[in-house]
Image (cartoon, rainbow over all chains, first blue to last red):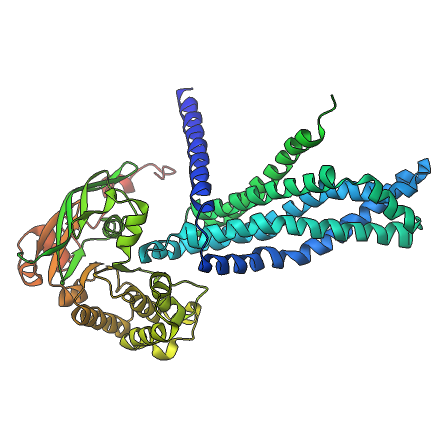
Length: 260
Length: 271
């Protein structure tokens, strides 16, 4: 019994310690002063983290839009409301699916790669040697990656939404025969820039920060062995996905939960 | 030792979990000399270098580099102090996304405002010194272990540091690379007049280049002196280590129950 309590206590302390380390790590790396060199490093990471995720976001966006249109049509047509297909596709994408699915894909592609890259740098003593050269790895390695993730996920989310709406059009209008004009005009009438588009952007900014934070911290804090790297990479994808889904509920409740 | 002191370790205590690695270590590293820190594997030699470099914090005691207490410095001052230090890692620790040239140029680019033409000249001079000027376009993954360590040496001395820390520079090297590294460490030390700390358990090679030697075992300094005085030291520990005897105060066998009892233990009782 005492043994179990001890184990529980130790595990709790470990979790609290990790949260504390992760918080300090975020504060220390996110407030690094920008320099000309830092800007180049950030641009390079934008390419690695953002540009290289565009393909997967494009493909997934089109398919999600197509599926939404197909599923939506089969329900709406029963009520003779198939004209509202554009509204349904756009609102689902802009409010929910674009920020959430883009963030999940981002965690799987860019997040795991960031963890593995930083972890391997740690395992091969590259981070230590950087410290010994007098260069802070938080500033040179972590900060550009953190900012790149924070900036690129909202852009990826916009791309996801746009191609999703196009995919919905492809299925709804070109295939199933919904009237083109009503697809667009219903969308224009119902999608509000502040309530829907900006709220979706706020979500993806939060997800961008959280997913990248988890990814770089897991890489920086891992046990520098091959097993350690593999565990940390898995943890990144699991924690980041759960964090995205959990935070999505919280943010949705804050944004749309006021029914009073 | 009447030479001026570059690094001073005072009453150093350090533990990892329950295992105590250092129990009151005192060292004085003289300026401009090569000092070797030797000892059996697992005595914490690399840990000592990390403590000197400020990457680990001691539980008790002080480490002074040129009079500054490493562990009392702010993060910014510590990084400033590290610019005066070079470290050669066991694995080389080259940056895998940069080629050989850029690896050596890295400290110059981040710490100086030198024009590109001058950085190029300095890097080529350093690579010439380690014999790898022709390998400047190769990536770290294309280098052999010995070459990687030579590039790492060129990078460690790129900023002409005052102090260079060598972590097991001879481990896993073939005889030719080993000979090259021994010569290089001596040559670099003489040419730049820097202070060197070589952590190693390769006795023969280390004793040929060291001016002064500390032997560490069981968390303490067991003996120290010039290579000549250690060679004739009568202490059983020192004799066993310096002459590479398989058994002695450091036992060949890991602690175990009596061999006879172990063999005759009932079948199925494996431990």
